[in-house]
Amino acid sequence: MKQLNKYIDHTLLKPTATVKEIEILCNEAKEYDFATVCVNPCQIELAAKLLKNTNVGITTVIGFPLGANTSEVKAFETMDAIKKGATEIDMVVNIGAIKDQNWDLVLNDMKAVKKAAPNNTVKVIMENCLLEKEEIVKACQLAVEAGLEFVKTSTGFSTGGATFEDVKLMADTVKDKAQVKAAGGVRTFEDAQKMIENGATRLGTSGGVSIVKGQDNTSNY
Image 1 (cartoon, rainbow, N blue to C red):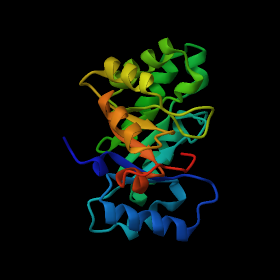
Image 2 (image 1 turned 60 degrees about the vertical axis):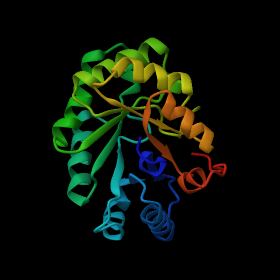
Image 3 (image 1 turned 135 degrees about the vertical axis):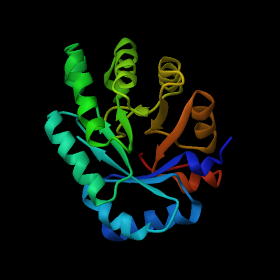
Image 4 (image 1 turned 120 degrees about the horizontal axis):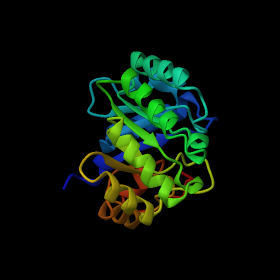
């Protein structure tokens, strides 16, 4: 099994994030050799500069945090992000379309982003706290159909984050056709281990340093 640090997308998505905080985030990511940093699109170029010639990737978020942008906007945002240096894309699903059971829209929304990022890892954020279990399963199935590499539990900005139960449900649904990212609420080393045991292969957290040190993550993401 890979080392815990390589499960972590070291995350800073709060709207008040400053250049100094992004610099700290990237320096920590280099020091602990995390999988990626996860930053807002306006900070991709700074992160790319700071992480040049390292093994740390750059994740950014698309249609964040509501998922309510049009597919065309999400596709453009994705292409722009990749041009600026993003290596992985975390897009928010169209939550309202799921509630409407407009599965064609949900699927085509995912496909539009994947078409814009054919050579990059794409993760779709489901925002499970707003969904029924059947909706999570269906959305995971559509993510596989769209050719996405990951399904992800949460933005960390809604009413709840990842749960062990949801991670297992998602992993059982996608099986070996996609991977699962648990995000929001991964507080401790024990949480991280249990998420992995339930099927997560990536963890989104702002407390990566605390977690790999075996300390509690006291941040709110």
